Length: 460
Image (cartoon, rainbow, N blue to C red; front, side, top):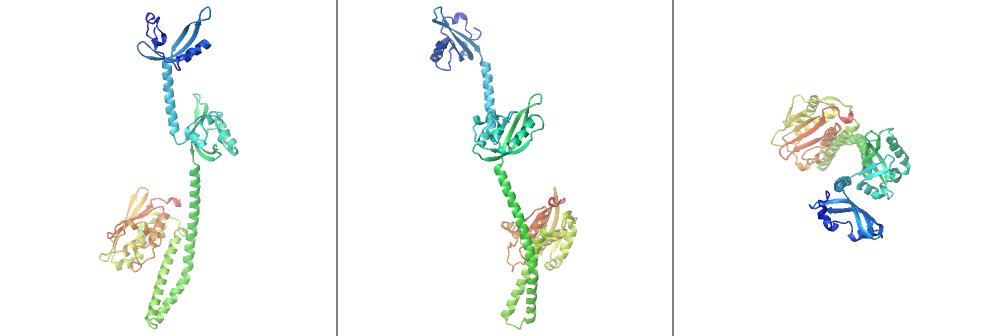
């Protein structure tokens, strides 16, 4: 009466399955058949109260017989388990939700018991290893996937941690062998599982397959090493070649100039022109070799860093360019109190001299050069700007101008070897900075470069 809401007088004489609207897990005939064969039946049913509420009941049936052994009735004992079933369903939903979270994670998740057996593994772990979940759960992890060559050492670390001898490394890398026999390198993040008394009860670990990443890192490292070696060899070659070429070229230039002085006007006009071409070519070759030698020496002949007063550097650079500045009618405006940085004073002079020289050289015919040098502190570095009112540079060439031997104009328009800005870039980068240009055609150019406010990291 209390469970289903029916009074005894209302229920007596009525058929139970109709009164309770019983829902069987299988056809009712099968349930009755089992009852008749064994004399009892146990299972879960869904039954409905008088008020229409559905209950899940644990139902136990026993077949009653008369004194002659003939079936005479059924004793049915029902226990309401609705709340328990609801709780179980809630737990199942949470478990399914948690499993979904585990399965969508892009790394292997693994729980090991203290004896090294797998208590949990997610789908990503199964995919990585090539095993089904059933093939992994309950198996000893070390015997299943750790290569024989490292199995005992890895197992020993785990067992020592389980005994409390030492903590399991929070980060650890080791090789595992997949079901297909492929070795994969896994990077683990480990967390111990402890009970209320702090005793270790296992581990939960996330493992990321870093095999391809490590291979790529090794290839990149090998490539960088080979590139650095190649660069050193090229720098050495450039230095040796340019150094060794200077003497024979000087001899050629000297004798050609001697021919020009001694025989000018004594041969025909073609001969004078040809000799002039040779003299001009020798001079340009000499300038190219000198610039190439300077470029090669940036790394190999650089000085030990020391405090460098940029004010003094600019004084020297402007003094070296004094004749060119006067001939061009240029005005150079320098910000008061430029900073002191750590670096190579000779290379700093080369840097500022090249940039100011370019500002003087690439001027507009109708306007005398106006050059401005400024500096501003930007966090951990100084940003210098050398701006001018010259011919400017098309934005499409802003990167190209810093490449060695790249020229935007013919030699007839502007002299030079195409090494100057590449030299500037190499000096700035050696000092831990970067260089770039802001410019448009006809509106001048502003060369920006940074230098660390403190000692360059590569020299520390």
